[in-house]
Amino acid sequence: MSREMLWPMFAMAALTFAVAVEAFRRRIAEIRARRIALRDLATSRGRARLEDVAAADNYSNLLEMPVLFYALCLLVAATGTATAPSVALAWGYVTLRTLHSAIHLGSNHVRHRFLAFAASTLVLAASWLVAAAHLLQ
Image 1: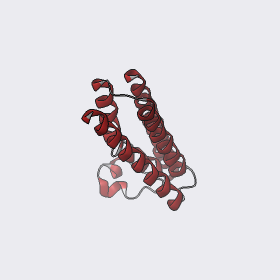
Image 2: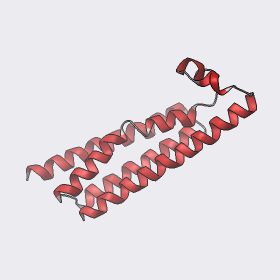
Image 3: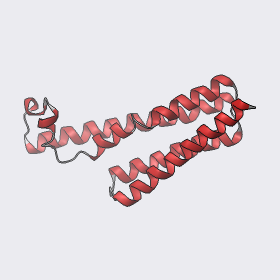
């Protein structure tokens, strides 16, 4: 069962790489379309000129809270405390983060995006509580 905790990690990594590719694609397209000199983007102040930043913002998001997800998955796998509910919660987190990314890269409807993010955060918190409960047993 512990190895099953690793597959959601691979899925999150795949999502992160897919969003990185989309961020690169959008950034290059905007630079070409608006004829922005690369030297003008050397600093964060210069990058503020960019208009299509949703994919880059989402990529940054995928390197923030998911760090706790990766740590949790490794902890559960290493301690052999994975259970069907903990694996289900991990997949639930990945699903909600995928939904968050789809909204962010698509309609970018802030309310829907926030609801997906909040739900994923609650699932991650529940996952940590489940892991702690198993370690206390």
